[in-house]
Amino acid sequence: MLSKLLSILKLKCPQCRKGNLLVGNPYRLSHFNKVNDSCRYCKLNFKIEPSFFYGSMYVSYGLGVGISIAIYLILLLLGLAKGMIQNFIIITVGLILLMPYINALSKVIWAGFFFKFDPEYIED
Image (tube, rainbow, N blue to C red; front, side, top):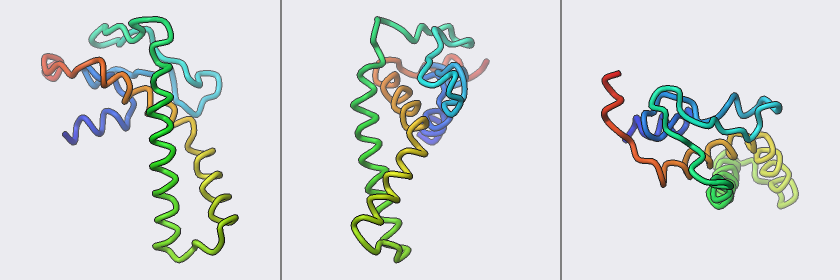
């Protein structure tokens, strides 16, 4: 379970957990939102149909809501939640800074719903 979570957080291929799902770092704007055609290790085709990754928008929304709640709870625990406007600004800035990673993470999670891990690739 831990290796699956780590592979998701590292934005790896859902089948072999070695290859990168994305073309580059999500914070490099020249590669923003670009998914590799296939995995370089297991040769899994990531683009099984046109617009396949549009469904990741639903995952992205859920991650954004979850991160917003987490930021607010951290503000409460640290005693920094002073006013509604201040909290809103802090949460908004946090989401803007995390947006490229949230977008990439949602694509990996979405792909994980359709492509299953194959233990055959562990020995390689």
